[in-house]
Length: 78
Image 1 (cartoon, rainbow, N blue to C red):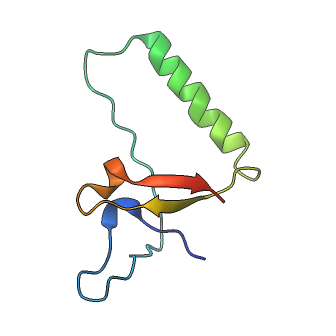
Image 2 (cartoon, one colour):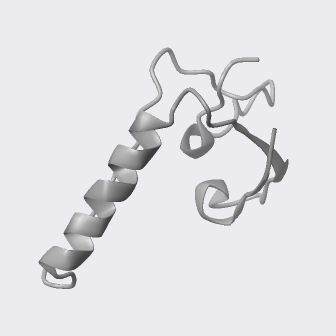
């Protein structure tokens, strides 16, 4: 099964999920809120995911709200 692009949603005419050729993760960081320790911990977490990428499983969407699905959707492990 191809990966779904959660923020892209579905085709309005067919209801089918969009399946992008390339899936990217966007990490946004508000200004003047976090310390260097926060940034170090975030970098370590991203690194840990990268190093364990072959062991990590995907997620299946089990709840999809009508609006803002990328904020309110619910998932379970595959």
